[in-house]
Length: 446
Image 1 (tube, rainbow, N blue to C red):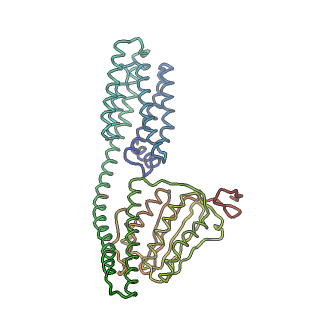
Image 2 (image 1 turned 90 degrees about the vertical axis):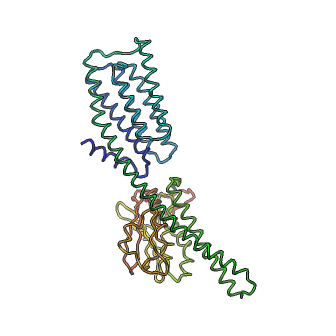
Image 3 (image 1 turned 120 degrees about the horizontal axis):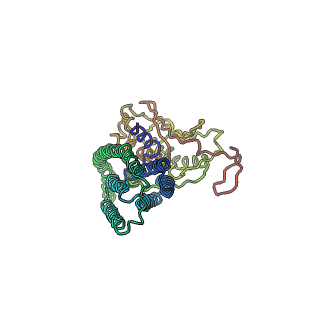
């Protein structure tokens, strides 16, 4: 029963983006809250001293804000929550030792359990040092109790002491041990995922080295040809055009690699602002219209009338990058027809889409198209395998995870593809007049 509850609690309260250490820090805080809460109720039932009951109640209440600070999107606030938790626990355990029977109470067991959790959940070089300091803390408390026994508040009866021990031991077996087992499974799973990512990363980097060498060889080769004095103006312009195209391709590859590296390292931060959908669509359209026209393609934006004056609260730069990646991929694979991007809103979701009339993506490749470090073996010459739909889509998926969105693909071979990414409708606001993005006042309809 507890294992089921713990698994459900973890899935609901811990985000997928949290690291292993942050994930189990929150587990430890949750366990500490429930332990102190159960201890408070037990103290009231068995009639322990009022100061002990008040102490455990204050501890229990203090863990609630620490838990939510530990889930904050800013890393420095999460680090502050970790430091605050350990300081709070250390002060609380020392107080419990003095006011709840000293070495005759379960406090030594709790100290040892905390040391085990620190080493198990946070296997960093500093963890053994922290555990050693906790051990020194126990020794100092024992010396203090030996030299000044009168400061230790004893149990009123042997029955109270035994009941207190029973509660602690039962909680350890019912909660802490299953949590350790859950942590072990989680750690093994993450290890398997990491090993898989490393293999895919190695294969991907080997492929990328080839992708980078291709435009580099073209740039170097045609640069050398430009040095020949016998070139006609037409040939010279053709070589310059080839060098420019390959330079742009190389720059795109490098930018994509850097973007994906930043996302992998969690270095990309959100900058939420309020802006109109229409202005975002105009920015996207203006950025890609010229390229579409050069390729003989029709680029269309699809903005329904009911959303014309709508604004959203999100990161405009990241949304533009998502649209740009999807449209750039569409321009690469579409040889005739049109590319359309737009938006639709249902009751609880707002969905953006990019549609192209390209050759489509085979069903067996659709399952892994959003995976990181996986790139489809596509070339522009082979219309059955359109190029450039691996790295850009990995970036789109990671950006949408950061923004709290979802992305899906609907594609049929020789009939085109539609990429749909959606968000909760709570990001949408409506205004009765044209939205002013420089902070001027607008009248809200809804």
